[in-house]
Length: 196
Length: 378
Image 1: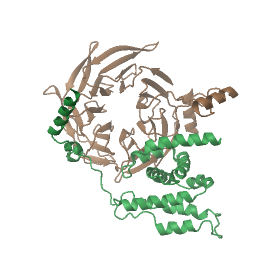
Image 2: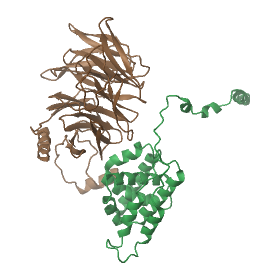
Image 3: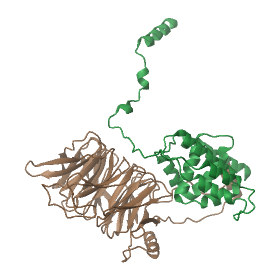
Image 4: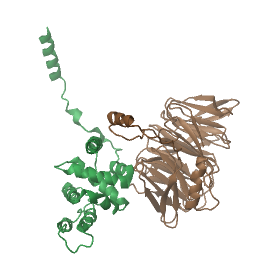
């Protein structure tokens, strides 16, 4: 009895029309659809890779640096936050910029992160926050731990407002970051507890 | 400073009558309730039932004593008091989405309704037909209009919408009024003309407010920013990136300062410096009383560690007066030039009245700000 019923259902589903229509994005065909203004992003090349690399390499072997062994990392940070490729449609430029930023952030000693964040102005902190969340999107070996340390300091400097600006920025996409953010925050509380 | 909890649900919108003895509010449903201030509290005296959808905007005209309401049922009603009853008159807005906000013009001969239909309906009463008619401002609005505010000249209208822009339109109705005098926003003001448009970088505009003179307009945006534009040949825009959650409502309380509130549940002061074109955060206006800090026993410490994974004594309790986001702010006493009292309502169903003591100087300096904060506490 049961087998007969199962066969009936199977044939029924085959007879109905295909469900390809379910994959159509109807919003694309809405003539009132909101289209954001296109800002010229063709000339945005992102931070200068050569300049940033040179500045990183100078640490810690630069004997004449008057800022101490970390002097050029601060400049590397400033350099890497210049020319953010926000409006460009070229994904490679964006990925390269993100990789470069991550390189600089990982080169800092943990104790120097706070000073580095304080050297940034308000828009610098906002931009740093955007790069941090972009970095959370694609975690690599040690990236999340480094980014979390930077996140804590950037949050003290920029407040929740800087995170709101990451979420509401239309040119930089961040969708599932928030959930990841919650998970990573809980894990750092656990770590703190263990090491207290 | 006084706080009254009206409901357990959010107050969708509210409006006051001229002498501030009655408040009309929507208790998050299809009705409007009018409360009268008695010595012992607030008494509900009227219930206005006509809307078929949530009432999203209420405005009470002080001189003509008429209430206009708009709702998600795509309608607006103008209510007039006949004897002891409020009688509604339907206004056909010709919109096919929900109405979101409504404001009487300063001379109360017309009102503007912002809606999800991506347009603003300017409604005025036509004597010949004994009927409210409306004209639409459509271009170049591309998304829901969330907030409106009239310029004191009864013609210009500021709108904040979900297409990330604050705009100033002309709502000049030639049947009603004479040609307006030139303003810093422009001299030619045909109906529907865009006198000013902000850049669209940012979030949805939750609220807009003209200053008392009408020469400045401020808006609060969802990306946690507040901005002020000063009218002129090329309008000068100053903005402030906040460190807090987004603001939902704001109003000017002097020509140079405004009070705003939002998802952080407390009103905050912002001061505008016209010379340097900057906005600075002037402080929280809700300073909670410091509760006595008592020490923790070792046992409590271990219990906290076990239950909450932290040894801190901080409780997760909101210390502000409002226990949920503040969604609307209105000047109660004084006007936008010299406000002495303002009122906030929020999603916690409560209404708070705040006192402001503004010094006689036109520019608020730091010592004056401190007096402001301490006067609020009194």
